[in-house]
Image 1 (cartoon, rainbow, N blue to C red):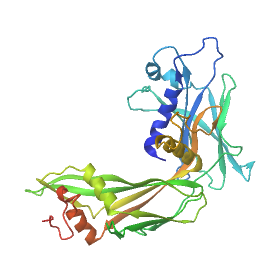
Image 2 (tube, rainbow, N blue to C red):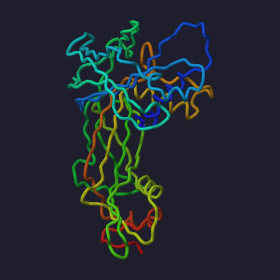
Image 3 (tube, rainbow, N blue to C red):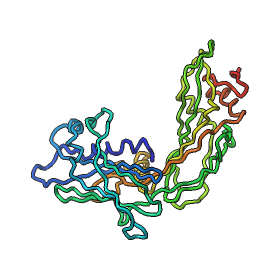
Image 4 (cartoon, rainbow, N blue to C red):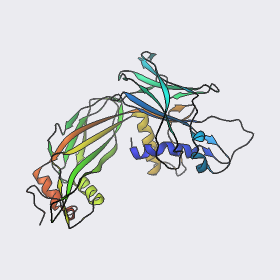
Amino acid sequence: MKRLSLLLFLGLLLCNSCKQDFDLTANYQETPLVYGLLNIAETTHYIRIQKGFLMDGNAYTATGIADSIYYPDILTVKLIPYYNGNQNGQIFTLHRVTLPKDSGTFASDANVLYTFSGNLDQNRTYRLEVTNNSNGYTFSSGGITGIRLVKDFTIVIPPYKGYKMPLATANPSKIVWYSAENAALYDLRVRFPYKEYDLQTNTLLADTFADILMFESKATGTNGGASLYADFTGATLLNALHRSLQANSNHYRVFNTAVGMTLYFSAAGSDLANYINSQNAQSSGLVSNEALPPYSNIQGGYGIFSSRYYKQQDSVLLTFDALDTLACSSLTNGLNFKDSHGHLCQ
């Protein structure tokens, strides 16, 4: 759930697993790397399974070779459901697929993933089990009966499309939702839509948006149904617009009321939350200066297997006062947003 951390997670694991000094007489040790996040709202699921490696030479060169980081088609990958601690329900067998991949440090000629299609049962737990058929080596997600799935939850405020939010800082409006069962952390990102015009000709130059992170890694318990709150502060939104948009005296902007803001909630399961918290603790100096291994819940390997859930509220508008604040705030008046009357701030 901190997406930027997790996008980097597998790469960090790979780099940490590329050892350039080793004992040539030592026994080979297989080091699987797993990254998978299940979502009950999805019917097609992907899990990344790669491998660490030992080498003599430049590790970054080896990461560009697909055979160094991907298993050939030798794995049996299963997702096994449990109910009340007993194996129960449909077992999903994943198949190996290759998908297009952007160029970069790691091999880009293939993006090997393991996938299955099907509906997950929110009342069951799931365990990932993998067998390397070439040597019998097995690895799995931690826990005897697997992970719990993050369930759906309710957004209380804003309650409906067209709801108008203020941009106060002294007494900010509240975002309110009921916690999702089995979720331990939340992020909230706001998509702020606007249009940009030529000041002289009124020609439309851009119909676009800015994505604004309102909060991240907000910790909660894992029981569902608790009321959770977060401030929707004008300062956060206005500062983000000030940083991300360029002032141009020849242009003006308007908040796109036909679209409205979209609030994107992301809820993370407990294992994903443990990984994020461990990374945050190290980066904030809450532990010793000596780097610790990344949190992992993979037995016989490294990585994260957990769950997440996304929820959104569309078409959230701004109050008239909020539009005036957007136009005339010291942070954003140079961006030439029009106020609630369609005028530039004087």
